[in-house]
Length: 307
Image 1 (spheres, one colour):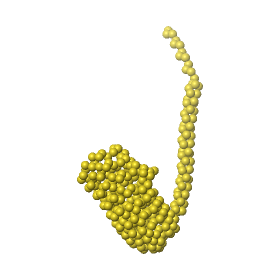
Image 2 (cartoon, one colour):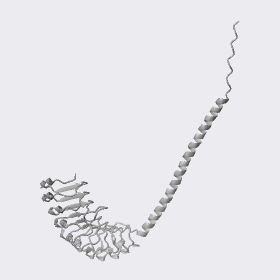
Image 3 (cartoon, helix red, strand yellow):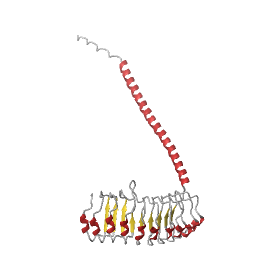
Image 4 (cartoon, one colour):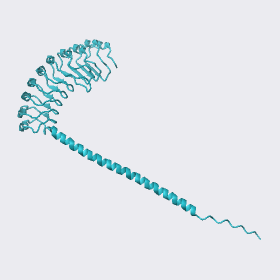
């Protein structure tokens, strides 16, 4: 399918709409007539930009625009922030295409938002308005270009899930440790050097991933987190590099050994068949020689005449 027909606007009672893997580049204006639409999922379409008509869906509660080939998306369009009833918003980026670089301050208009996923983009800064979303429980910002976590991170006190992995974060603000309801915290693949003893304040924390940073050791206070799954992954970049180096060396040795074994196997195979061929040739030669040396039969004696 290459386009959504305008007749879609006639589905006045529609509450759920999902569009997957189509060559659609835009949405018709008639989509705005779907006044009862609550959930809209758009996955892997070929938009040139996020259609503004989405902002007219006033009853929308869940919006997912994931891995679409949007060619003009440096900033999240303002139309999305007119959706006052929105509870879930996913704007996951796709590789090799333009990605969002800025989260507008208008994000603060989505006062009912509980789940926000803007992963896989090129966000560099986080506006304070993002953390004024008092009902926010799930925030996924992994695979971006974030360097600094603002002190306002402490504001969404209902936050339970925070993923900031695969960014460029070097330090964690003390305010992060004031998120009393936080249950899952993912900070892998950054450039973090130290974890504060204040992490013990995150008494509800259950999952913590610090893998692939520059952390040499964890504070003893982390043992006070009774609900936390242990051991905590915090293998640093030097250890990972050393482990990768050892693995590559072991793999190289194994490859060389396999190559030698393969070469030897091929050589033995060839030698075996050559020997067999030589033996066959010798056998044929001997047989021919034996046949040539065989004495000729004497001629049959002439019959004596009968008396």
